[in-house]
Every structure is written in C-alpha cells, then in structure tokens.
Length: 192
Image (cartoon, rainbow, N blue to C red; front, top):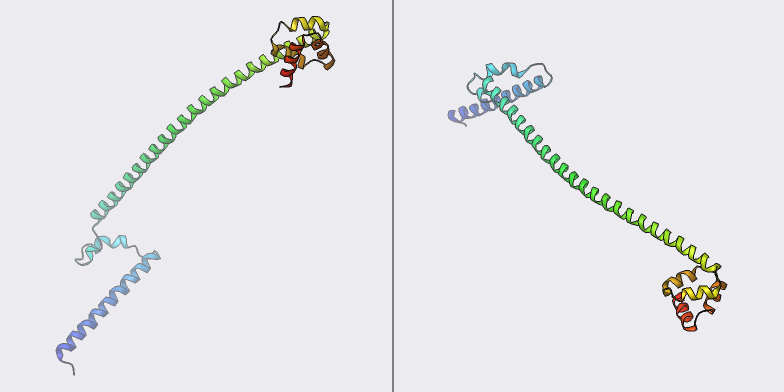
C-alpha cells in the first residue's frame, strides 16, 4: 500500500499534469480563435503584461513599440544598405559600359581608318588599271618594232604587266622584234 506521502506526491503530479493540459488547451484555443480572427490578442496585451508569470510572454506596449521601432529602424537600415549596394553595382556597370563604349569608339575609329586606306588603295589600283589599259591599247596600236624599242627602255615588270594584258599575236610580234636575251627574260617573268 501507498503511504500518505506517496499519495500526495502522486496527486501533485496528476494536478500538475492536469494544469499543464489545461494551459496547453487554453493556448491552443486562443491560437485557433486568433487564427480565425474571433479574438485579437493585441487588445489583451496591456492586461496580460501586468500578470507576473505571463508578463514575460506579453511585453508592455512601450517595450513592444520599441521593438517595432527597432524593427522599423533595422528595416530602414537594411533597405539603405541594399540601396547603397545597388548604387555601387550601378556605378560599376556604368564604369564598365563607359570602358566598353570607349573601346568601341576606338575600334570604330580604327575601322574608319582601314576603310579609308582600302578606299585609297582601290582608287590607286583603279587608276593603275586604267593607265595599264591605256598603255595596252597604245602599244597594241603601235608597230611591233617601235613598241619593242620603247619597251627595252622600260623595267621588266612594266613590260610584263603590259604584255600580260595584250592579245597573244600582238605579244608574239613585239617579242620577235626584241633581242633574244631580252625576250627570253621577259618570257621567264611572264611564266612566274
């Protein structure tokens, strides 16, 4: 059999468990009612903050406002830091874009110079081609003996360029009027 002391201890434990279950049931009921919007716990905070044991869980309004202010100030600080980071990122992007823009301008300038050089070369080539065509016509109309005499005074490269654009029978006539050594040298250059 149990002693009186053991019975009291057992009753105390049972009472403690019952009180714990009641508190859990009350907290659950309050949470459910607050979840459905039936009661608003905020309106009971001033009353609950005066009860000694419960006041730890429900701070007074002033303390809650301070916490909210801190939270607002912290939010403001976080937003300020985020904005600063965005500013820094935008500044880096701006610098990067500026560098790229400068590089593109340099490339554009280089391309313009190259285009101008190519245009000048093309004009020069066209002018040389026109001059060559004129000389081909001129030497083609001359007597082969006269053309051969004039060509012996020119550089081998000039003679080859002119003869390369003439008809074969004209080239043969002019070469036949040259000294054999000169004609052979020109023919060797023409084959290259």
